Length: 254
Ligand SMILES: [Zn+2]
Image (cartoon, rainbow, N blue to C red; front, top):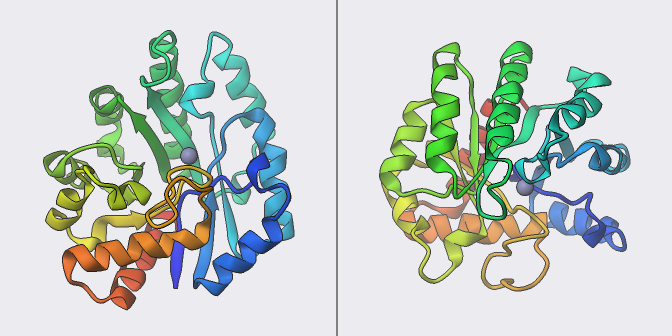
């Protein structure tokens, strides 16, 4: 059994064939799919997927860093005003993205910090988006580490030393399709850290692993990531599935 810890299957890319996508996932041995939120407007779409497929899906709630702008306080209010903690397994996705736009860097930091506080308050893990912002993420996160905050660096962006540091801080490393790309440094990371700290993810509909690269990604394809980890580490495929699923169950209390 496998767990896709990061999948946006509530987006319009899946409007026409979500039934098939879920069926493919079940056929591929996926037991859980975690859906991280993006903004206020995606909450209902996400909840509808949960209603239609309640056993295989779990939800996370948060404001994505690329949705943080000058009105971020209002966005946070809209998202968390009606927030029922029992509906969610994590706060996410949250963090800082300096790839697309640096205009709102200070707003992004404040929104991230605010959502870390919520995660602490409700004892939820955080799903961190850290594109081109590794140092900024660590700066915001560090003062909270003593509180026992836990979570995952989704689509881990760093090298093996940074991965070790993140693990020491109590976090897991999210590994997805990039592991299978030529010129990726993720194989080196996977070689040097124990599988006990890896979570599998797709980031569907984005970042499809080889041999599906360039096509829409979907939860079933997380098996290709598990196969690549098996190949790189010499760990049997079934063991990679079991260990990474146990990791996900531990961090998200599944
Ligand atoms: Zn995402």
